[in-house]
Image (cartoon, rainbow, N blue to C red; front, side, top):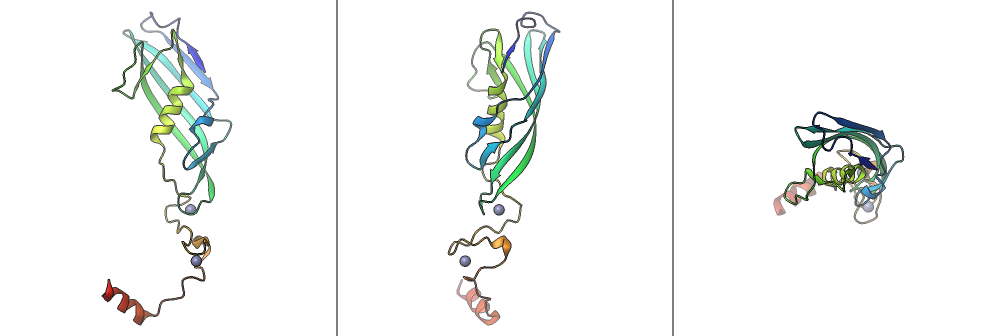
Length: 162
Ligand SMILES: [Zn+2]
Ligand SMILES: [Zn+2]
């Protein structure tokens, strides 16, 4: 969404607010299979002494694939985003976004924040046991046949050999 800033760009003290459904489909990639429709973004751009401050609260539900067991699960995320809008690019500061004329692309700011701040190795649960490397069985459902119970005497021997 392009947010029109004409009314505030030269008016210190003024603000313009927004409340809409951002299109975050481009955030998909890696562990993120998709972003469920119905994400919400609410915030404002405020002109404070000539500097444009962007602020947004974003709620979205990510459809993720577990990095260990590949099971798909939903992850609700909330992001609070702060940024400064500037007429020129500032490659050194990731929190500075360029204006496009007298408006700003709010989707782009939210997407960039999501891509930079989402863990690339999401797990369905913290102690996910993953899949057996031999047979591919989901070890969360119980041990597979590849792993016979280790004889305690053999375990001692294995430790000695390590
Ligand atoms: Zn998992
Ligand atoms: Zn197995």
